[in-house]
Length: 181
Length: 181
Image (cartoon, helix red, strand yellow):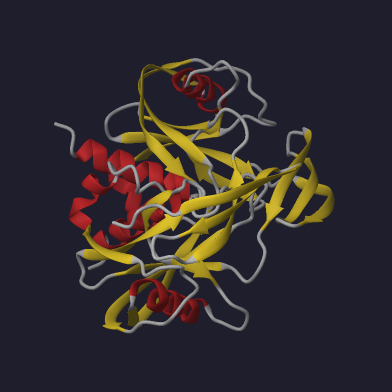
């Protein structure tokens, strides 16, 4: 295992999209490089794997401006100032899927593009669900689609199920649950 | 299924990071919103699931500036001008892992954050591998780590295996291959 590059200098540039940082790096073999990375704004983000039973996870269908189509994905959103990760998870779940959860647990952090972005999202497992809807900032009510974990082979063929982090969350859920006694 | 929002107007703003686009949208329920998205530059990107045998995929360990740590991930890179997706996949595989592939096949597109980014990467399955190394722009030789698909439950517990798209690729591979006769 190589030791981490030494950061000789860093320079931050603010713009309307957030913060870019220029790094002057020296790798352990002596190679010197300039890298650029984007720094995540705000208080973090949370993605929720809500399971009405041990075989099923709730997907939502949401308009995605980046691809200009409706995407199947897991509920997610930004953590507000003063909120814990689990509070944010329960709020987003109520806003986007119309459920709250009695049991909430952070499973792990998932990064977006770690080579050039600091962005990460906390994946929360939500179980023991109850119906409750909170008004969010969504322009329309989102369709909720329960999906069985033993039918993921069909889901990964769907063009509109494309988001890396949502797929990642389902891998984590399926692999962690399969190892659970 | 709702019909797609109508785009009443769009405005592009160029900056050093790429292109931002402001959209004036009308949802099918009449809600009017302004959305912003980031437009991917260049000719696309490719991620390679290289399998030396039907049970194993090759991971690389690469320095990631966004998280300032070494990350386990799949080989990937940008598609150069004039390259096909499969040519780019084979080149990146040779540069990052020291293998070429006689069999290359695009499995699907994976998006980064489709609600606000257009960015997508083509996942390519590479089989029938042979040793060949090309010099790339990497500052150091990358460690290659073969990982068995029946041990993904251990991989998803590793902090340094955090990238959503790499996890997504392994879900796609495992689910598609399990459905293959």
